[in-house]
Length: 337
Image 1 (cartoon, rainbow, N blue to C red):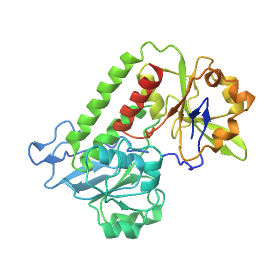
Image 2 (cartoon, helix red, strand yellow):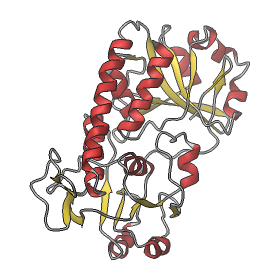
Image 3 (tube, rainbow, N blue to C red):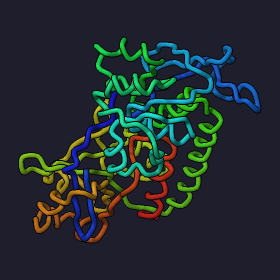
Image 4 (cartoon, rainbow, N blue to C red):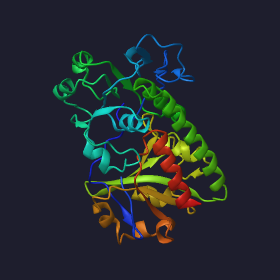
């Protein structure tokens, strides 16, 4: 499943602040990568390396054999790109590089020299073939089904699922381990996950005194109506905030795909707890939603807006891996503690 699509026409601000409006499914492994210095990696959930290859379980349950130490990897989804970069994998091709940067994913910026591969829904098969990566990693919607067999002739293809449902954090962690193994960097993946766990424990202590609730939203305008995308506790960002001890003011479970729900302005006014802080995720390139809300009495009557508890959240991708979630925890502490 591909991460939620976002238009560049998403933004919202109030009280001088802005507001706007993934991953690898529990991809277990069967064989660990072999580190040149230390031998087979430990703790990777696999049994043993097979020659110069490792076997990784794709999101659809298919076992895929990949080079133990690839020299070129193509990433077809933003969450995958972030994981590849975060473990230091040899990223050589990426989809929608401009969009990746525009939506605040600078916690793991794309290195110089990476080849643009087209859009996340329709990557350029010709460009991928010319690039000739050792491994291709995407989601179950990155490659049109009619083209999958063709792409598999270029290189082994791993598909991934979204870190949502009943265990978004666990799936995020499994995603990161699998990407680490697939690109020959399982040890760095473990280090990143340990850093996330350490930051979570620290953030929980720092947020222990927070008594009010929060909502994490982005907003868009559709036919003159403002709609707020709400992140419930089954979303990855919502689950991490919950694990840090915070109370989510959006109590709906959200959809089964991403743990997201939707409120219009009327629902925001009627349902947002009076003690809530609004954390808004912004597209800094567009303030049209902000302009449409400014001066609206209903919007300005919301206690969070009237009392200055509307905060802009930037430079993070809420559907990413441990690096993105460390950034999210930092922002929660900076904003709420």
